[in-house]
Image 1 (spheres, one colour):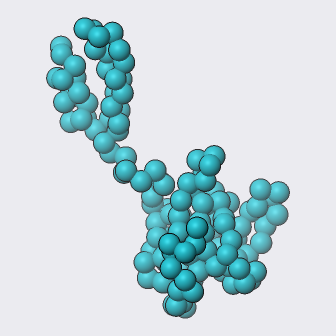
Image 2 (cartoon, one colour):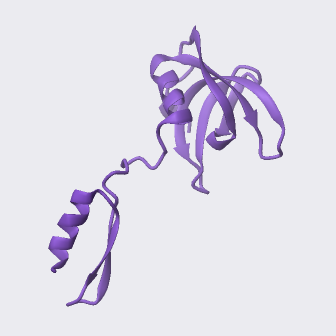
Image 3 (cartoon, one colour):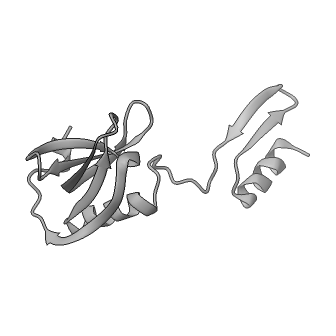
Length: 128
């Protein structure tokens, strides 16, 4: 079976596959076509955050810090990205601290969309 036929079959199955090209003896990796181009995970917590960002609603949640401390936060969500370690993080204006804060999404517990609509304080491009 040729490399091209294997690649076509893997795309149809929508799964990642490692191919060996016998003529060149090299390994070619194909990207899983079912994963979005954005590496930030979607659904669940991220889905709630994105809905809040789109609708300009306050996001409230309990937050477990790296030190293990738990606090309740209300945030104007502005941006989701991956940090240097590959963890998804939320940048937003924390209403309790009255400042920009970065939250690891893995530390968010029970995120809720509030009914209050906020006016953006600045453009997302100005954030970083």
